[in-house]
Length: 165
Image (spheres, rainbow, N blue to C red):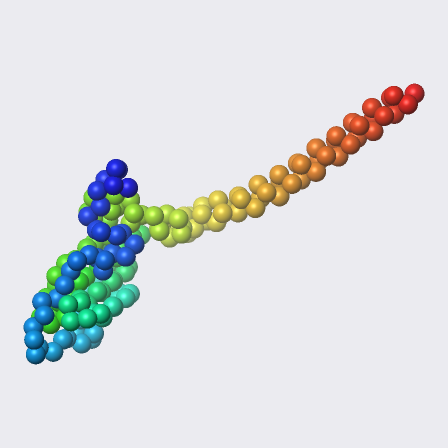
C-alpha cells in the first residue's frame, strides 16, 4: 500500500489507537470518567452514534472513541475516530473516514465493498450472487467432469464393439 499512497494513519485496521498519542500526565489530577469522555465527543461531534469507547490503559493512555453512521461524512463509510486526553478532556486527534491519503480512503472502502454494505440492497445482492458463484462453479465442474467420464467410457465401449466384429 505504501507504494500506491503513503498512509496517514499508522495502521488502518487499529486506527489511531496504535499511534503514539499520549495524555499529558498531571500528578494528583483525577482522570475524567468514560461518561465524561463520551459527553465530550458528543458535544464536539454530535452526528453519528457511539460505537466504541476504549478507556486509557495507563496514566499516559487516552480515551479512544469511535462513532459510526456519521451521515455528514458518507452513507457507506461514515465513521469518526476521536482521541481524548484523560486528564484535561481535550481532543488530541480526530480522524474522519474517507479522508487522508488515497491509501487511507482505499482501505476505508474495503469493508463496505466486501460486505455488501455499500450501495444498500443492490450492493448486498451483488455480493451474495458473487459469493454463490463459487459453489455453483464447483457443482457445475463436477457435473461436467462426470459427463466427460461417461462419454469417455461410452467411446471406449464403442471402440471395443467395433474391434470385436
